[in-house]
Length: 335
Image (cartoon, rainbow, N blue to C red; front, side, top):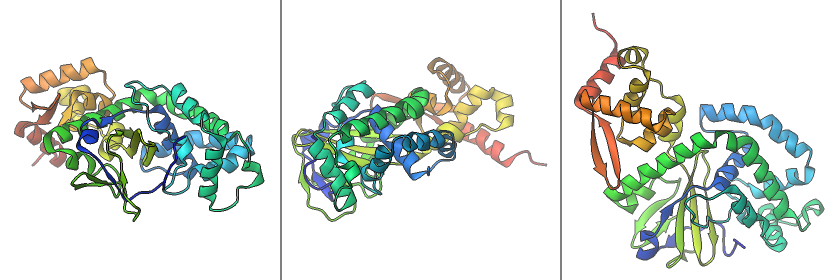
């Protein structure tokens, strides 16, 4: 059971131990929920997200047309700025969570808790069609469909983007502390100091989560929510860096630079507008780890980039010479 207390809270009181042991994890279920919201709302924050939506929306609508009870359930699961508790169990904390175990947690929800969530969402009586004991099974079935049909085909690339976000935030954490790592995680969220983490801008009573396990879960769509299994586990699901998600799909190296350096190296250099790790570059460029490593070695030898260590990561960035090359590409030849 994953619901106790108000869904929206202004801030959490976090102990030093809970914060120190906080972990970034990847969740296939969280990614599926975020994609379900994208399908439900028929909008995406990224141009390539719109292409994904156009490809999968017809099948999604056909799926709901064949299952009118689930079609009636979805708006209760995904109200604006609210996601039903029973479909958002916090991660168990494994390094490599699988969708089957996460969906099993949804199916284990008591029918009474699921009905209570639906009642809260609808702010009134539950329609007869939804007043039934298998709502957790129906929700899990839909989420399994979303995963199989719309997420799994792209999971390898999406996972690289999520991993790149985690690397970037971990580096920011090691350099500048929790305030820098958390302040831009999701709208309304910021570190207030003195162990206080503002979750959103709503004026709700604070909750003390000291002693609990705290997880941070990135997703690629622009979506976010909180989840908990009181008193042991809490999670904050947040949209991964817009820069990463956008650049991973859209950044193009100038044609002249590609001709000079080769497309692979030109693409790597183009993405180094800010320091990035090898993992991030793999996610952003779609190139394999070995290729990115070779390109970085050659760019280092040419003094177009430099590197520095940030915690456990090595970040690469353009030197003045590299910036001059990129500036020349933007300004073009002079007479």
